[in-house]
View 1: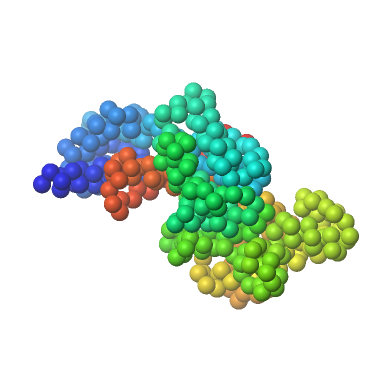
View 2: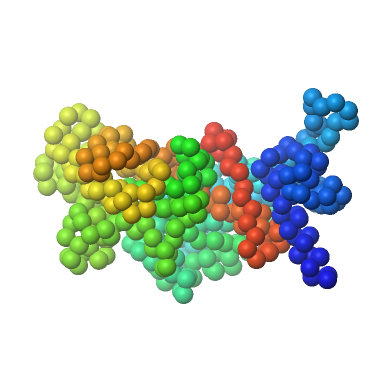
Length: 404
């Protein structure tokens, strides 16, 4: 009986915190109606949560006849989480409060040596940001790391991440747990970006969304029925290996991917060089296209055709409501306009293709969503098996207010 009572208590607390998180400020009477729990149970649990600092009073109900009721909301300062976006050139770390609002952000160039140097860099940055601006590292509960590859569950290494050497040889999450002494979760960065766009309600809070990132590489994150699609080995969305663009049977395509060889940073630089005989950066090629350089325009158009083919392949298989395009290259209007044009030419129904609203902070938003969900389950469901607590997203303006 004692075990059943404890489980019942966990379930009640989960339901109450879910109601306060999603609908606060809210009165205890409204929580009772919403959850079906007795007023006494709600009052006891809310009182405990308030004593422990997890919820706070924020005034009283207005406009009602008779006695006014005290209303409650989640206490933002009760805990912090860290969201990390590890890229081939930059590491971004965001510290968020219990409602998902970013308190501060640090950005550094990725440690060139890769491997354990990158782990040390992430740990140092997380410790530093969690202790900055009056925050205490003791309040940090969870860190989520977005990585440019796929986590190998058997070894803990990060596979398919050619731009950061040595991270396939480490038990990435376990070593970071040791360095930080907090819970650490590792997820593919594009998957996190997809979750971030979904969490923030990209163009209508779609339950079915495909996120395409084009930058140093190309990849996608797929959200179906509100949940991330990972696949049997965690590699769902590795569209760089779609068998078109370059010859998929060439040895190089097994390492980089046939599509990625014709769409990402190196492909655009090499494509322009082959046409013009001039070496330019991607930014310079976009500038040249704006200045009506025909070689630059043709290079971007070729990349857009291949990306449009990839989008149509995804749409034909999973039929998402929206395709969100992001990444340092994908977010450029000059490319996006061409992608939309070519997708319309090879698919019989309209496809909603939009630019990322979160830009280079999409993966950080996804990491915050994942971290908060884990934290709420750990704190308020006490790790109850199968428990889920959805945490509402802050407004985008509030989320990005303190970001660089």
